[in-house]
Length: 386
Image 1 (cartoon, rainbow, N blue to C red):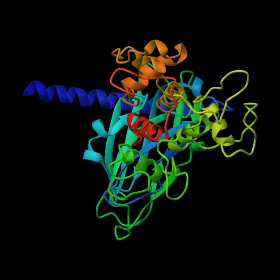
Image 2 (cartoon, rainbow, N blue to C red):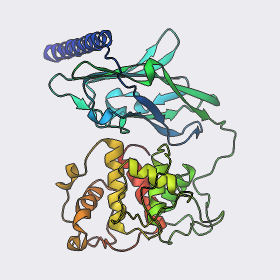
Image 3 (cartoon, helix red, strand yellow):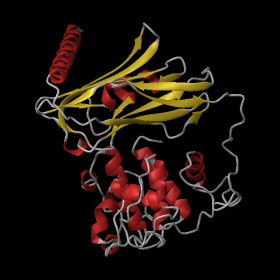
Image 4 (cartoon, rainbow, N blue to C red):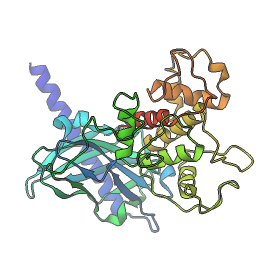
């Protein structure tokens, strides 16, 4: 029993020492602020903007900036404030519910600020020997919340406190220009009518349809939509532009202007900014010779390539880390293009993509709208964004 207590005391002392060292490093770094250091822009995503009491959702924090892909830091501390009267962490367990993305946070806290009754999530990373490279646009942290059943309707704030990223040369990168960043969502009244689990969204997607749950969730998040107000056409083919659009909407990426990246994508088309955004995020590549072929049907292997590049982008991870776990499930692996094989393996290992049968992947067949909806949702789940 004493050994357990001693271990806990030692662990707490180590935690305190790490935090104190981290604070000293960050304070010292601010004092020697480098001239011309570029600001880092934060963003908070929720999946939707409106929720009912009892709903669960993921809040993800992302950072973007021109220099982020080359910024390596030994220490960073993030504090996010939320209203604990209306929201709670699932199971209220920081070790379980403050989920790492590509940063393995050294310490995690979830504590009440007694001065204003706000709840603070606090995560810290400090490692002298193993600095981490911040990846542009990737999720720094994902947090699972639940709207309390007695939550009061209205607009609720999530506030990211000011902080800086310090590189290995003690140059400071100021997040949001050293100002607090606020994002809001709305809690709707439980008296309002909400869709029931059995509601038939489309005439051609009945309650027994295998992909109904995926389609309904993505329609609710405005990731996919019907071909008209009554029909989804689940067995229609998906074009390359449509699937790129699904991914960009699912990740809530900010759209950028199209600048003629492909000679067969004309400015003014409904998908031009969506394609440009996917290109910038390295989610899509062309078909060669400066072409994207936006209206061509997307094949299953092409779909895997896009979805795994999206996984790499938002999670700051690489597909090759999962390839070794592939268990030779598909007997037609030789039919998969060499450039796509790792993507197919990674997507299968993560549970994002299955075969057309237990042993066949059929890589060159066209993807259907029902399949695309299932894969997009499974991708969000694998990324802890469902």
